[in-house]
Length: 186
Image (cartoon, rainbow, N blue to C red; front, side, top):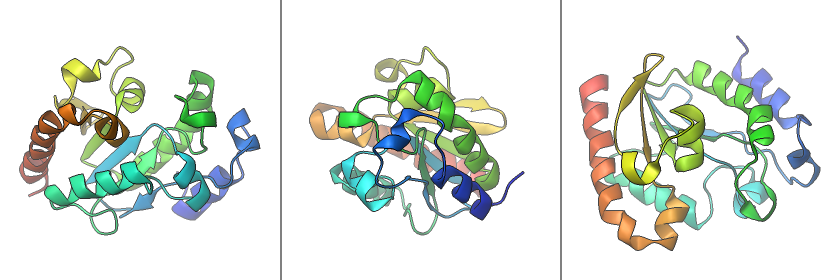
């Protein structure tokens, strides 16, 4: 297995798909590399591409607020990454070929963090990591154990910015995450 510096170096020099052609920065990941919980989104947006960090725009501010509700902080006790490390044009969903090019980096990040809990942020991450026919509208907040990691999915913060009616059920999902953390990590 590789170490963090080597993995980040490989990731930042990647040219496996066309997303590398227009990137400003590779968005590798951020947080505690020894966290019990890891959050995975689909890919960086404009602000993330410019700053080189995941979830720093409006959706990132909302994610930080969501994390604080359950006593989590990206700098202290969780790790945040994405399926793809470069921004898809116009923030479109990452294509399968782009996901395939990047997924090895994410698998290495998961292997290095060794989280007990992994939360997918949105349907793209859930379909890639939990099950390819995952239905976020029906299955969000449900838990599954896969490869020794407890996994769940919640609505992506961007979806919550577009549709505030999903926020009450997301709040319930956050409480479920907090309970799962207490159950597994204490």
